[in-house]
Image 1 (cartoon, helix red, strand yellow):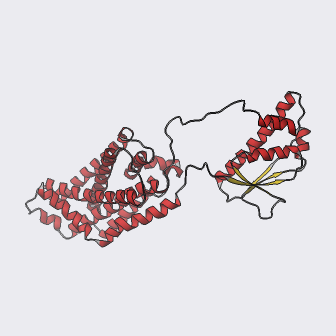
Image 2 (image 1 turned 30 degrees about the horizontal axis):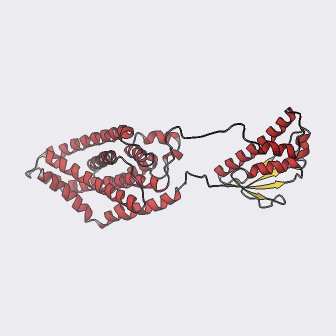
Image 3 (image 1 turned 45 degrees about the vertical axis):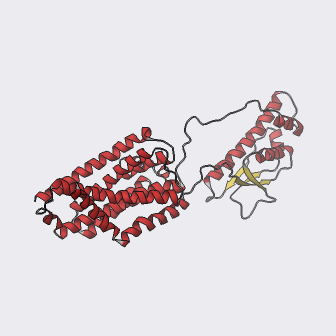
Length: 381
């Protein structure tokens, strides 16, 4: 057991002596989290947000005034326009001339809603819905007055608008409040997954390539060490490096960026250990399959970056195409990131993420066995 720990310790000490590696482990993740966390800091609670709407009213009748009053009750920031603007705002509504007369005469009338092409899509949708609601309320009041054989006047419409609601709607959550992870809650776990994979792949593969080039693995054959000790020592070493990266980013995420990692810490630990084993053993496999140091570094970076992008480490996976979301569930970083979001953003525990833990553990087992197979060929050659 002592030999196993000494081999693992040597791997960790070599990494700690590499100043460039420490920059990648500490400074680069913080920059990524800060930049991408700020870029995708989409606040899901937009209850205080008001879509702006300019209104150019060309009608002097009472129905257009009631339409405007109804619009004012919506969650809109309304600006009255004296003329149709040459440089229009993001969106505006044109109430045509003779709007009141046309409705009273049961003549079709059209409201013109104009929106800039590059304007906010959500604000456009909110404003359009508000206009439709206000227009339908006005038509409903007119229809009710006509049905009751009452005159369609401003006073009668005001009475209908001021009466108590005939139907009260009470809304409540039917289950957990699920929001798309954004901001630092998305980027901290994403960078735990991406940077750990990047460091794990590059370090494990490069170390093995260098040892093979320098003949260190051949010299081990005459040393008083068994195959199992060598294999477990190397696996523990690369896993420890991955866990060191994970612990550093967990601390940075909690202390610097204030991310809460959920209530089920044992589930978090099991998940991240499984991921660390997967990353470390996969890096060893790369080191056995590629003999050139420059090639193995390039392949490690390409694999880590591409899998990270597909898995949602660069942006919320929910905004990606469906094929990418499905593919992410078959990749180790995608499985791990999804489970982290279940713990962090959705407040779930071991009961909900045990399939993800089993999935990442299966990957870790497969890659560990492959690494053992590759090492046995070298050791017994």
